[in-house]
Length: 305
Image 1: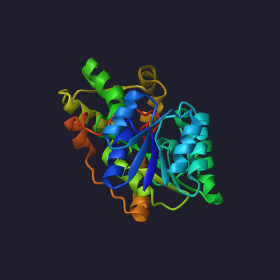
Image 2: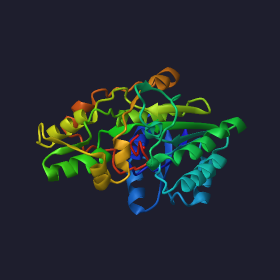
Image 3: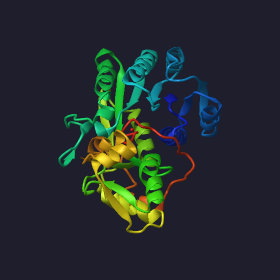
């Protein structure tokens, strides 16, 4: 299948291009500059020069494709919706896979799935009208699918690295917010890439959370990260107010207590996460690996995109 993909030079994009090519798909990838073009080319994709604001480029590339995978980080909800609209107009009755994130569900009060009500922190509250508009195309002959990644780990592991590992190394202890008993809905980057491949055959209007089904506590994750950088056992609690000062609005997302299940994607698509020991990966410090890179603050991308 011929795929057009945005965000190909980023953390999720690199892994997804690699997975698509491995499964025999042909990929064109949006590239906003020479560096991005070189990156996607090295992964086996053909670069398409332009950015998310180049709606004519997006539309034309979608017209040439059989399916679209939208991974790129938009600056605003309006920009994301405009890009999605241009690509959905172009792909017509072909599959359009849009990226959301699990943070939109807020605190989950136990294990939930895609039917849970939305209660997003301010950081990702803009997603609701965008995803609603994307999914509405299913009522008019389109094939929209939404993938909502959880908090990503593995490979470059950028969000955890930037907001926990790096400042923790400087302070001599890895931080966690509050008492650290809140749970993180984690997903390994390689498993998530396989979900995007599987989503190409999803039914129109489908929504899938991309999570590994293992939801360790934030303190357990902090302890694992501490072990990876030679600070075994050295973690420190910070208040939510302190976290907001140090991290910005993303602190409210990291403080969420989330447990989600991948059961729907397993049942519908046969997608089963194979990386089910996130604490071992975090403790091993798997921060550099070919095929990953870039930062997405789209919640979950950002993490949970």
